[in-house]
Length: 128
Image (tube, rainbow, N blue to C red):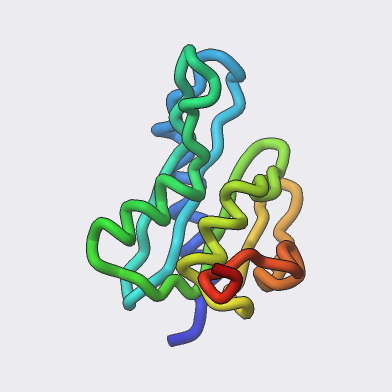
């Protein structure tokens, strides 16, 4: 199944509207494609900043909790555009192969990468 980038971006953009970001005011939405379905997620902040969860991980964890273990694409939508943090890249590396499509989008840009470009030296179960 080919990745419909426009659909993923639209789902991420829609998920962004549900973000809980009272501290940073920086709302992010994400969408993942896996197992023939799409899952949206938004960032959820917490007064104890370390407990904040990025949109990418929320969307990935929704897919995982639905039984999907094969994520093929991740789209991130923010204004301005935001790239995945190290924690999100590491979670992606657990559930995506190195050729997983990663899309970074805003109203001004759409950039497409593959995971191994953003995380060339991934830590995997092979390192354990």
